[in-house]
Length: 248
Ligand code: NAD
Image 1 (tube, helix red, strand yellow):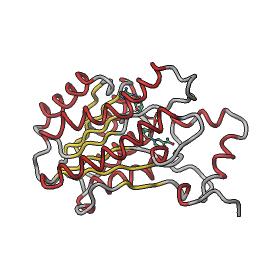
Image 2 (spheres, protein in one colour):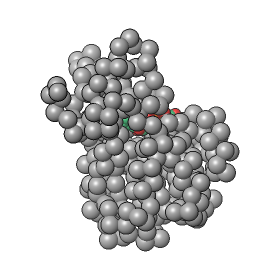
Image 3 (tube, rainbow, N blue to C red):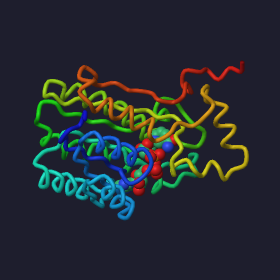
Image 4 (cartoon, protein in one colour):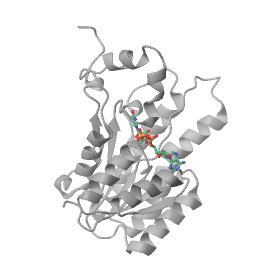
């Protein structure tokens, strides 16, 4: 029961990595607030785990401030914030439409700032934690993923700066960089002949990770077991970024 009575807000909690994290942390005692743009999945996860569902668009600052306020109204404080909502976006410059660039930066980067800005004043227990779901795509480039990679790189360095700023207030801030994880976000790869197998070939472990494997890492970073871990960028990618790509 690592999270007994810990008030935990998870964005993108209705699906994939966020839903797996909500389930794991609730099983270990957390009072989970599931935030998602998609109302029905958020409600389904919250009902399953005895948590609270809030429908919000994390790209909208007022919407973020409202879900933070709702969580605090209900529970009095926030102990753990998991900024996990995210979308992908394919597009090479100059073809990438500015609207698409702006939407990805808004959801994948600006939202993390909005949520931290709103939540930090309520994370006063002296043992609070923020975990941001970044990506290995924030550590290197990918063909055609310019906006996504720029946003995730921003999340990584925002995480470091935030960790430094709040270390002495007892707020730890870390980021998870998943590699390829089997969730609805990446399910499209299955529909493209050969893509999934080619992708797996770039991963030394030869497979995608599971949402539950990511939830385990997020939970560790959020837990007291990581009490001296802050500003860390934790990679969980089956060895993908450890490899130069040189054939064996
Ligand atoms: P997912 O699509 O299963 O879940 C993402 C959730 O975020 C969905 O429930 C969606 O409704 C929600 N969401 C999207 N836009 C939102 C908005 N504007 N406001 C509120 N909620 C919104 O995807 P996932 O794979 O679980 O992704 C979770 C995080 O992990 C994302 O930040 C993603 O970039 C990151 N990530 C995923 C992978 C992967 O391979 N799946 C790899 C690296 C990083």
